[in-house]
Image (cartoon, rainbow, N blue to C red; front, side, top):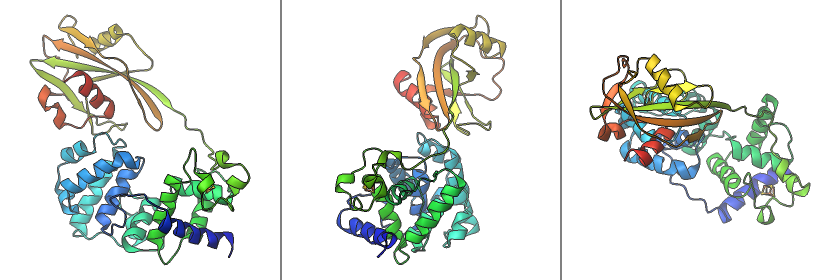
Length: 354
Ligand code: SF4
């Protein structure tokens, strides 16, 4: 038996005898629930995604119920998960399947991959878990396990690397039980061959694992590109006028699209509150002497995949309504919780507006 054949049988033995990882969607065959869990777990840790998954299933037990829901309600349920394009795609796909396909989830890899928000990884996961079709998942866990066990130094974010890992993953896949195999390799990467401090001493592969045998565990997998992080400074004006607070929906092609926020002044570097207020007067959001500053929040920070946001909130009471409030809505303080806000704004409201 060569190393590749041995790998699959060892992995499945580990899965049977030692894998204790529990997840509510494990063994699930309903493609709707699998799809929902996979979309939630794209760019989200299992621990964080779990409560969201349970909430979605409870609120929308079927794809028709999700498809019929108002955007606002779904966004509110998604609030805090980030990467909101996933939520928009979720709605588009639910409505497409509910209406155009009469609620019947596509049942081939190719037709699943055509759904909005579904890439090769998610399509392989749904196809193998729901329909036991032989398509290998290739996610961060799989890249890591294969790079280490087989000593592959091709970059996992290069075209050549992706091709190589995908071909190897397909070759290793147990074609008779692809769903079980796919779940096993992802679990193995998540609980044993972890990114930091993998459990090599008790690992079933340690005798054959290239990285362990050659002391290269910390060097594999290899990545080509360093992500450049853009820094942005957001100053929010939390304006209260006659017991109502101004909010607006983000509609530009930018982060947090469709979510709500307070009127925002974005600047290129940290600025003084005075400069921000002057800018607000220029925009006709404030009258020179028509407001008073109640408080100033501490600096909030949020790290996104390619951006680092610093945000500060200036709480103001207005004596007169702004001249330029065309796309704002004036909402009673108690009703703010009905709207979906980015995490940084929600954190601010929880700690400073209760
Ligand atoms: S020996 Fe260590 S690096 Fe190799 S597969 Fe096992 S956990 Fe991963």
